[in-house]
Length: 111
Image (cartoon, rainbow, N blue to C red; front, side, top):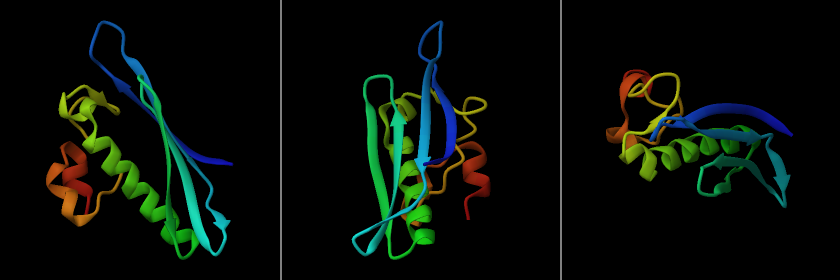
């Protein structure tokens, strides 16, 4: 079951390309909890999951894993990945060792 979606765009030409992030509800998977997500990159979708000892940890780690994937992408590095307005960030948390990559509002609000 999809519990959250965010629409980003890749702005590298006259027409932006859609890049949707979709997160599913946590599920019990043989004693651990996983939370699946998809990033619909224009070249190929990235499907993965975060895992934790309970649903809360799975949600938290999945959100961070999405943040890592966005900030590590070639689209971010090229400055063409956009949510809301260019240069404002993507609204996903990052682990402490990745916070130096943050831009815009992500840099201000990530604690």
